[in-house]
Image (cartoon, helix red, strand yellow):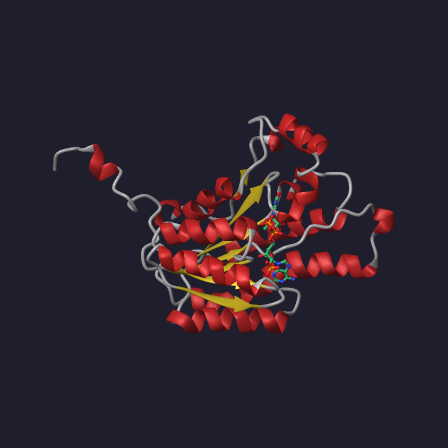
Length: 263
Ligand SMILES: NC(=O)c1ccc[n+]([C@@H]2O[C@H](COP(=O)([O-])OP(=O)(O)OC[C@H]3O[C@@H](n4cnc5c(N)ncnc54)[C@H](OP(=O)(O)O)[C@@H]3O)[C@@H](O)[C@H]2O)c1
């Protein structure tokens, strides 16, 4: 066959997810929302999970349908194991399998150690680490029904690099990274498990910070690539880690952070 650039760059031929079914937790907003749309553009049908923002989730699902893919929404508080299990069951029963799971639901809290309360400690662990663990656990039987299943967890630069304040959040994200490696080993070779660790990305989670001009400038200056990230900077990495092009990648934590982890 004659070589041509058009065969190399056929739309959908790179990191293609045609006809796969993926559940994205926290798909209603921020990084999760950008991931949902990126996966739909790659050909996936996507289950959009939300907690409180039903309208936001419904609107993301509508955007998926406008891209020619199918979508459904499902609610759960990821701090509640039974709700997480119900969410995953609903997603699995939709098409009878899950090809992918992306765990983006999470919260940031930044108290100093002296300000941390028992409730605050539990909240951060339950939502970030417990929510991820129980979602993957519930998804495994559905993932096993798919031909090439993969999980992508969402960690943070703070999963491996310390910051001042929010120690429980940083510990929970470090836990997400070790969970990723542990499950990558345990579930090989059937299910690949990888993580994406974003740097500072402009979302509702840190609106107070990125809308503060001084803080905004400080982060941009500290980031070797000179700016904050956008959710759309993170989403293609998730698409790659779900695709067959990453068939030989498991247990990896991919920093998508403008280089700030180099500091
Ligand atoms: N933004 C950053 O700079 C950054 C950097 C590193 C890592 N991360 C990580 O990236 C992930 C997404 O963050 P984001 O910035 O996109 O946040 P975001 O814009 O605040 O969105 C958070 C998402 O998580 C869901 N959520 C929050 N609490 C929940 C709960 N108890 N149960 C179920 N779902 C819940 C929200 O659902 P509703 O919309 O329904 O409330 C929403 O979809 C998080 O794991 C975060 O730790 C973010």
